[in-house]
Amino acid sequence: MMKQNDQPLLRILCLHGSQQTKEIFRSRLGRLPRKLKTVAELVFVDGPVVLSLREGDDVATRSWWKYGDSNETESFEKSIQFLTQVWSQQGPFHGVLGFSMGGSMACAIAARKHLFQGLRFVIAAGATYKSFLFRSEDSTIDELHSLHIFGRADKLVPLKVSKLLAEKFNSSLTCFYEHEQGHCFPSRAESLEVVVNFIKQRRSSITELGTGHCAKQNNSKKPPLVAMCLNDEVAQEQADEIEAMESIYPDLKLLSAKRPEKQGDPCGHLLIPLKCDNGSANVKICIEIVFGESYPDVLPQIKLHHSLSTL
Image (cartoon, rainbow, N blue to C red; front, side, top):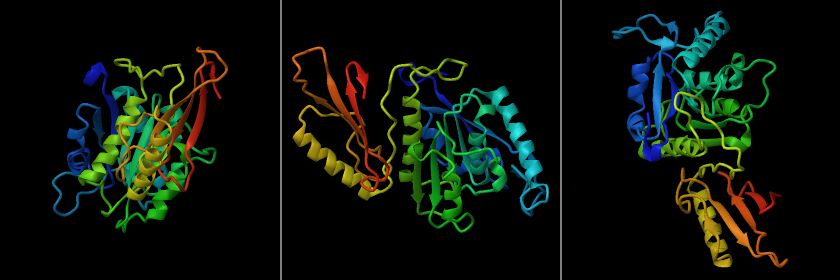
């Protein structure tokens, strides 16, 4: 399906939490599917573990492993096999979005990305850590962008437990977002904006999406992808820094959509052209500055670009 600017939609596999179904999860996402209508196609699947009917249930709910059962690991491995079949039969997919146990499965998929060709990113909300999610040979999950969403009032999955999962990912490609709600996929406007912005950034990084095929990367050098401001204070710090640099460098070009204003806004991304005094009009030099989501605690990434190479 083609949308804005003739760009195909991203395709995202969506994994529900325990004691849910794909339809329940779809409804719990609120306005997110509508907000992503021109950006991504969300594909929902039911977990293969069928749970017993609870009082008041009309339909049996599903899970991804038998929680608390001695066969937890065995049922988990069967779910991984099931998802590899979904990936090959219903794909291609570019990302995985999961909540709670589904978020844990999304991280497990990332750790086995050789089985899930074309995977570019993962979004995990309220995800719990289990040792069997990662094999002994698994180390840091490189090359994949990830967004980890935590609820400050989540009493089911404590913040520190969810962060154990996030630590498995490459920190330079990882974004964190904390919301005020409990154990849920956040539904408030500011929270949905964070998720939508993250997915839009992933889409903009793909320069060529083949119809019916996994995305192809452009071989040309691209600037680093931009993270999102962790909180309002970070956004204000970056906005002040950008304003100061604009007064010093009148030719400064703002590559991000705008100056950061609040939590969840894309971090500052600048390009500063410099004058070359070697007498050659064909030689161009510029400085690229990419702020991170934790600036000023973490220094920005700085690159010096030369017309003949990147230094």
